[in-house]
Length: 460
Image (tube, rainbow, N blue to C red; front, side, top):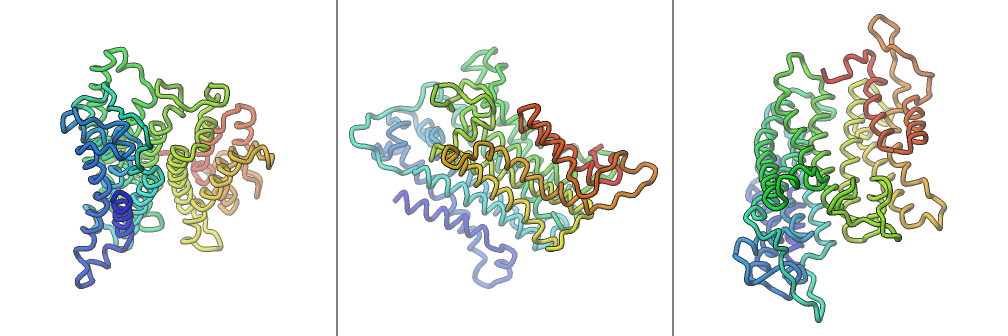
């Protein structure tokens, strides 16, 4: 029954990928979008039923359930395991795709279909990750029944995690809106993103507030101000949502690149917060840390801890999937920067939009390969390469940008055909020993290098 439910859920998510706008115009197909969303929720509610009935034949129920707990706590135990939140997140994402399935303010049918398809694709990814983690796996013979941690047996456990994943679904919906507008007219883009940011900001504020109250009640005041990276990661997308909600107050016209950048940043930070939480403190030292090397200590840098986690066939694949999607959002933004700067590749705009995400995929696959086979292939430095591969297409393409020598123009030159930004970032990575500083340098300098006027490249 469990595996059949997962199949129905994946089918529902794939139905979201189909062109909703064309469905509305076809006779007899109008109920199918709603059916797809209903199917996307089936695996989650089947798992909830297993916890409510305390079905000890299911491994996750046997480990975290409890027939003596109140009904609400048994329901909350569903998202205490690793698989329950994925099914919940997939359901929320599919629901938002269904809710905003029609074109919004000054949005074409093609843009709306692209936005909904992106959300449906992410929901399908979450469903595949949940399937890989086997939420309905049978309990091993002789396994003793466990129970939900006493720290989690609280009313806040019932409401806080679902609100967090609903907030992340809003963030990704905003990012999908930004992606769908790349290569199209940006008219109405701010209105569309703010329309989604307002409820998302409310839900995120409520989730963070309840999380802070939970930390205060369980860990006292000092625990609330500990700023553990896992417990405070959701603050980052909150900042992005707050920035997006206040863009209307900017007195001057905001460039399309900045608008899309803020939207993509909102989704990227939600993924980053999820990555930090699901990686158990891989980003920084945390009381939740479980990523250790053979000597029992954590790798010295964040990327090393994340790559080290990739060898775990369960959580590792999940975390690397989030990292891949996050980098894809960064790649889309860089492609938009290049397009706004007038860079056109000979292969055409549509293919150029896909070039950076495909390179991101290739680079992360190479990083995963090197993680498992560094001793055999001698590719110890390869995991660090992907960070530069992500930025390489845009940087090399900037040699085609014509920079005029005029007052107020670009204050510094660049040798023809030489990606100066890439060279400087490589020096930072080598001398500083931190690839993330190099990535930050690239992200900040690329808009300047692509713009004829550096003052116009900053969101002021």
